Length: 171
Image 1 (tube, helix red, strand yellow):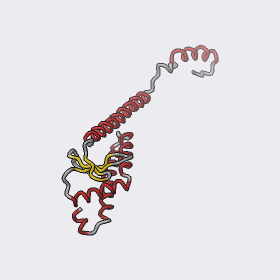
Image 2 (cartoon, rainbow, N blue to C red):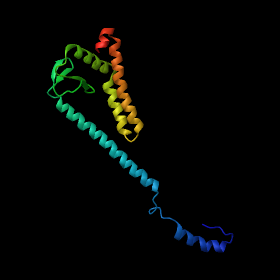
Image 3 (cartoon, rainbow, N blue to C red):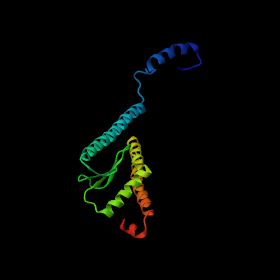
Image 4 (cartoon, rainbow, N blue to C red):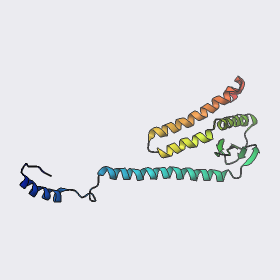
């Protein structure tokens, strides 16, 4: 509305201004709202892709390990294993490749047991869940990579701290 100081002019001009220049809220769209909605959809798509990728890879890995042979306790051996790893969150199992010599196998099992004692089989999936939520942030990707590296180094240090110098060299 306009205030000219003359009431007669105000009463003629203001109804015209209000009817012709007042935006209709149903036709008005804030460009930031459009960007926010598109960004939300993009974020949800990225989150879904990360989670679907995880579920599919986990399922394929479980399928590959179904014919693993139980060695002892929670240790299994399989010809489909390229390198040792732990699979499972609530009942974790250690998977080893076939044909490892006894010294190497003892060192590997000690390393994997250090992971279990440290609860790394809970920490790493939690870190990946954080990565899945913040997939768009390159700093979170770097943090996840460093987390994985630090987990491995901490287990190596734990195992080496319980060995003498000769065993450390072999490790």
